[in-house]
View (cartoon, rainbow, N blue to C red):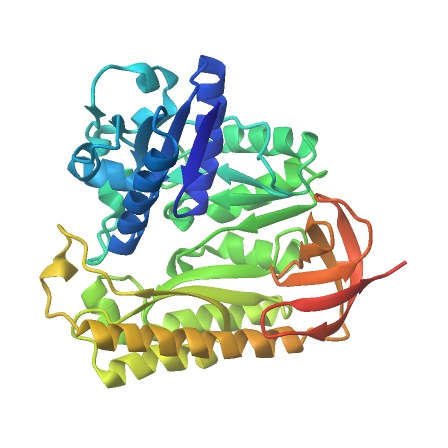
Length: 411
């Protein structure tokens, strides 16, 4: 039996399922595969810690490390006595590579020109399916190592995406989440340059049996008019949008080499809320980016209220070797830690207010576990009832805690 341990984003989770299918078909056994994340130094540290623990508990297993951290710093893992094989992000999707006698096989990710659609029939223990439609990134934000782990932006053909969405729907998944490294850049490299909005409309039109379509993290400045029309008109497109905002201060955004300003984030949220009043917003925010002053930090903190953000992913800035931000004047670590804690506290308060506003409403829940589901806006809800994972049930929200909703099934 092969175990796969996944770190990081939804795209990694998707690719882990593709890897599971490939190594299963190839007959790989008594192995533990670590699909790593490189977004922060902490993510790398956690993966190394997990590898050491796995070796202690499974001394005879073959330990294989792959993913973004393996791609960007293979020497970190090949230098560990616990590791038997290091594979790059392109190599991990070819079953033959898991049986090679080499210690490291990590090729130039920038040479990869296509993203093949990974055909996945099932997702173990999941009520929703992920669907990779894009990989890589053409942008070079000063803090980010991911383009060097994923390569340049490349998209899966529109027809292939629709075909896989249809297949996943026929397999019984009521909800599909479109994933990518830079999702809103979808289609720029394809003939006719179809946009993400065009893809969303095409899926919903050609797969009418699909009950829910959801987007993973998006870059709001790249949201096209067709995507905004889909948000306004397509009830099956879930009204929860997680933004790659990173900061609420214009000078920090420039130093990050982001393509949007503070006002752009607020304007996008206001426009979506105008056409879809039930929309909820989340965001990635970085605390303590180099040169960030107290006033700059307060601009980011105020963005939570000004844009109406409810679901935050807060990252204390972590310098990544090889990025421009690592060479900038750093903020003291204790200050970074304090700012991250304050952002999280503000985010927790905003989520509590958002959840309370749902009391008394009727919601459709996608059941993830017996008695536990998610609303269209991705709020977690506890409810009484015998519905099974994968079912969609109607409930009435009767109460809210700071972290989730309490609901009762509607007969």
